[in-house]
Length: 461
Image 1 (cartoon, helix red, strand yellow):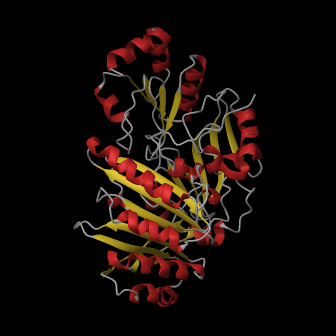
Image 2: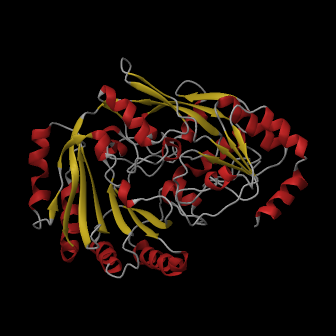
Image 3: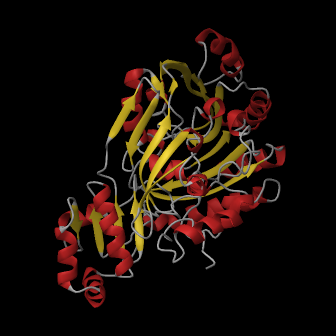
């Protein structure tokens, strides 16, 4: 849709004076098609997403968010909500409606005495880690530092500390939310308890999360990093990884991956983060460092904030992305063999296959205690395709779908909501056994489905 067509569409819905009154009441900035800043503001991490909203409200605070929600509701506008803009499905932007953009809301306050932190909805994990690590504290966050705290937490929140301290959503103490009717509510274990339950895994279906309060843990130096193996040892490495993770202590989170090094060499890899005594970690990780033998051993003591940047180079902004993901009860040989065979013909050197080991503290939370329900699944498997040129999209998407089809039967239908790509119709699989309960919360807080540019839970009222 051209800029001119978008302007005509907006004019048909809204009188110019109405938009001007809305803009005058904002402390932040209102962007429209044709403005220089608009082009940058509509871009998200995944370059496959090319959408053109009629308006982008760059909010400076909660009052702006309330005003934008009321404006959208009163004028029947499609609403997208942007925090970090990192989600692979591109749900931070929409065509023809309004983007309520929190990316400028960067407030962070660490309370070292209570070991908590309050952070606004535009904060990224790298920014949060920077502040909390000044006090030797941290919490479970995403594997790429530029990921926003909001989207990752609302979808569950896998991360390097999850086996010891639980998911990101397990460490949330409260969330301030602007609801569809423009109210500002606090959701916690004692206030708006049903909403608090739904926000911890149910995504952005119930309102706009403007502030998160997290429990922090002492996290200083960890033992971690990557160990790289020749790609022709990939099958053996994945079998070793399966056996090694079966007895891993809670302090250890380990991922396995098939990827291509910066030098263009396909490799198999294991990533580890051990959040315990360093001497114990050295002994525990010795089998990983001796298996192979490895091409490169990059494990070392490092600050937690540094290990959180390990995968930043594998997720550059502005590339085209298409992912397929599933949870698995086990890493059966027929699954790992398919992964290795598929990666041998991967069309892009930027693509990877990643296996994340859950369990530990993640699995000790009851399935119904939070909206994130996939507590008993020990592994998440993701084929993450990245490429540079749009002309290469068809073959990269086809490769990803073929791989997923090959492993679908022996794995499960369950999937992590944060890993769904645009257009995937797997909402019930993302929310699992908690779906009907989530519908009930949706009916209460957003019965008109104002917030539907997400992995949508449709109301039934």
